[in-house]
Image 1 (cartoon, one colour):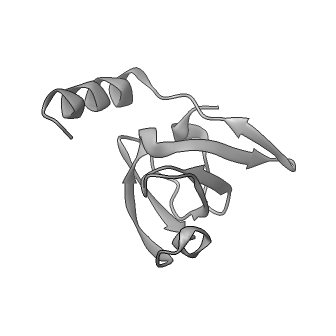
Image 2 (cartoon, helix red, strand yellow):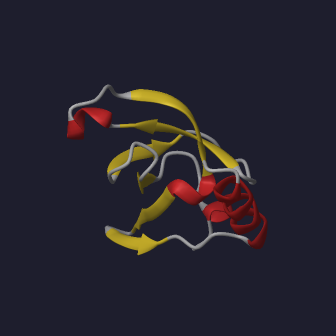
Image 3 (cartoon, rainbow, N blue to C red):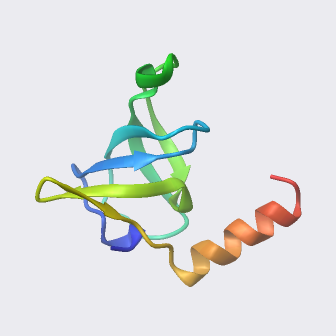
Length: 87
C-alpha cells in the first residue's frame, strides 16, 4: 500500500519521533505530507496532531493486519533531497 492510499481514520505506525509509534490518519490527501494524530505517550512524549512527511509512515492497519507502506517516487525524491541537506 502506498501512503496515497491511506484514508482518514486508518491506524498507522510512523517514525517521525525517532521510534515507531501508533497514530490515526487525519486526512484523505495525497502528497509528501500527511496529517496524523500521533500517540507520542507510548514512548514518553506528548500525543499531538500535525503534519508529517509521508515517508515517515511505515505501517498501516488493514483488516486487523499491519501492512508495510511503500513510498511514491516523489516522496523518495524528497527524502533523498532532504538527506543531502543534512535533515
